[in-house]
View (tube, rainbow, N blue to C red):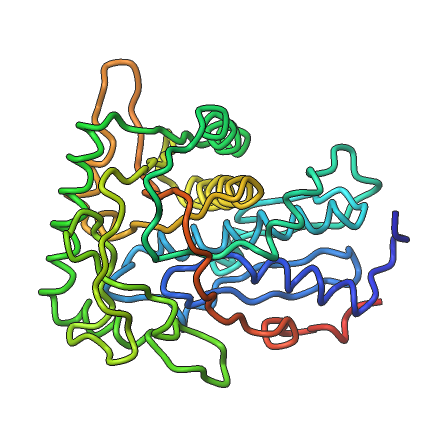
Length: 331
């Protein structure tokens, strides 16, 4: 285990691990600050990278930060410290979404495969094969979500068809809404100094059978985007949900989502996120049917399968995301 002091290289590695997480439209809506007195890392919302039309409540922003928080916890434990985590630690500072204090020796370390996976994980918006996922892998993914206080449900074939219809309706609405369409297009960027947004090559082709409703980020297709191709006929999707729908639940859902994605990566399973229906309140309510034995709130729809890795979106360097103390605050 490393000593109780935190040097600059280790601090930057921890933050780099955190920012390897997924975020809606690759907005990377987070910034980090180290409190050297308590050796605590703060994760704050970068409100200037919020999506006013697509995510007016900030729910997706909180999920994104939750994903980064899970990565940070995994990395802190990898280096031998106990990640002592608090959500929404200061009500008078609503932009402070989470803190992670580097505690004593780690009590229960994360499996090494998760730390390795966080550097390799990224969304694949390309077609997957028809090869089914083993039941044991699906069970492990459900257990990963449960570990973080969420549920991951695999719908039946008929329920999958219903959910895909809902997502397709949401995609049509997004394309027809001028404000949302413009907002999405704004984040399709060629390589840029800020390393934000998504290069066209990462977006993948359209499904010419329209079986899988992937997000079309360009109302007029960008010339660099791949031509339409057939996607899998029977996509494997899963719905991540929580019992409640508060800001803390959004942050927990983000941690659950990232743990699921890391476990999937460790098993060689690719994933892409179908978020469109969550952006319309009436459609979001339909993603989790209300059975008599439980109620829930959908937080993400995940498409899973075996297929090409695909190119990854860039990430901002750790030094750019450390503010108000930054790496100079390390001891």
